[in-house]
Amino acid sequence: MSMKTNKKGLPLHVKKHEGVNPLFIKQRFLRFYRRHRDGVVAYSLLAPVLIYFAIFSVFPVLFVIYLSFTEWNGLMGFPQWIGLRNFRAFFTDLDYVMTLVRAGIYGFIILFLNMIIGFLTALLLNMKIKGSSVIRTIWYLPVIVPFSVVAQMASIILNPVDGVIKNIMLLFTDKPIVFQQSAYWMSFWLIVISVWKGVGHTVIIYLAGLQNIDMSLYEAAQVDGASGFRIFKNITLPCLRPITMFVLITGTINSFLIFEPVQLITQGGPHGATNTILFRIFQDAFKNFDMGMAGASSVVVLIITLILSINQYRVSQRSIV
Image (cartoon, rainbow, N blue to C red; front, side, top):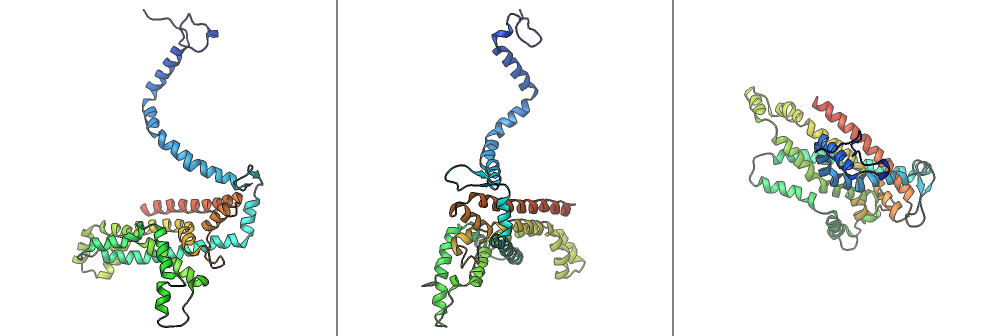
């Protein structure tokens, strides 16, 4: 015999003052679950990832944006709201602007060299030669080497007391160059080490693009009597356009993210000549304990990378069309 219920699904003998009936809650839940079963299962599986993303990605970004409008040393008290004062200080202080410009200049040079060297190397590695797989592995090895190890190698080579390069220069001159005292030479080595460390990634991307080109295009061009230069110009370069745009735009975004070589090799020296925006953020946050300025600088970098990311999406969509 079925139990009679009212319009709300409650048994007739249950009064309102008795509170929420567990049977009513169970019925409502089962009704909702049957109606949205796929969604409930999907969100249950995604819940751990969403929680992790919210805690370690969304919350830190929102907290940094909040800190950019405050003054706080990160150790005592609570952040004090000061409005746009940190942003005004950023854009009126030439040192902050120069760290941003310097990061862009370094990034542009590193990106240009990575693309040229990576593309030419990929063309050579795409040829059928003995030991090509070993050579490709050697080219990619610097990418997986930690920058702490690279910094130790750079210290051994550039050491002003008994470095490898100094001992070589002593064979030809009595006054070897002290690189650590020259802004030009430290910038030079910063770029060289960054290119050596990252060019293998560009090589692999271009090599994958070259190997995905349809060989029938080359065969048809050779049958038509096209020269090697015309084949390269009219087939290879157009087919690699999406790869080139990807490398160009992602490299432009990463140009403002130069941090490890500055921190581990130059320390921003000499006299701040190699200081970049991310290293300045690190100094403000963990040396000067000025979380407000560090947050404002981070927001500026966030806006720049966001603009570049939007441009990346638009250009990639345009290239597909």
